[in-house]
Amino acid sequence: MRVVIQRVSRASVSMAEKPTQSIGQGLLVLLGIEDADNETDIAWLVNKISALRIFDDDQGVMNRSVLDVGGEVLVVSQFTLHASTKKGNRPSYIKAARPPVAVPLYEAF
Image (cartoon, rainbow, N blue to C red):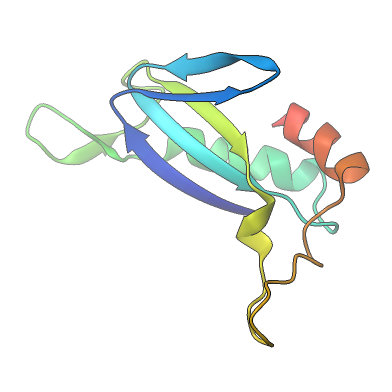
């Protein structure tokens, strides 16, 4: 499993067939799931992300978590995080989980 985490003042995502999702202050998480991932990995990552102290406290020190600031989290599935570009000019996504594996794990996240 790979994630990219970005602290945001607001974020949104939209898809042609579904309504736009948006959040205020919080975290934007790009989530890449691979075939070997399981619900234990999800639980560990959720705990880790929610406890990361990456928001400023009153002294301007990154000492508060998304929970501490009452922030929101927007998770976006991003299989391209598992791209391999070692050979050739075309990325390979062989490590990225296929939808039957990835969708239930994404929804559990």
